[in-house]
Length: 118
Image (tube, rainbow, N blue to C red; front, top):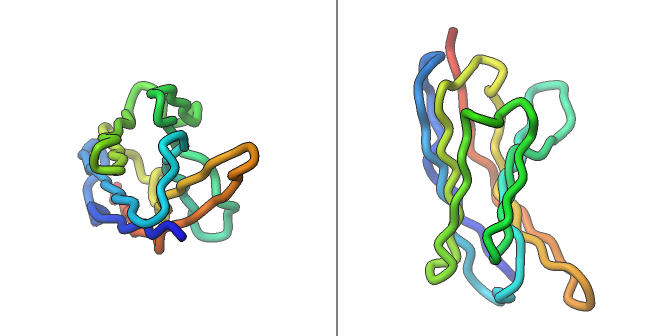
């Protein structure tokens, strides 16, 4: 089992910044991917950004150039720095941890609300 604890959500004005953190604990595999998904009201959950334990990252087109993702493997923690926030970035942000291959597994955090006011 893997537990994910998120922090850093909140209310911010358009153009502002927020930083999300997610710490993983439990049965952590050294090779994994951690990232963030978001879900706006009435919409499906979508990938925002993810990064592998090797440092390879990918981003949704809508956040490229505004969001950065990083991780501290020693702390099993992933960070999402969100700059130039827009109202359309509003939603519940969920931390995700996944492994693949023979040890395939996936876990989700409880979610943290991000609200960007115009």
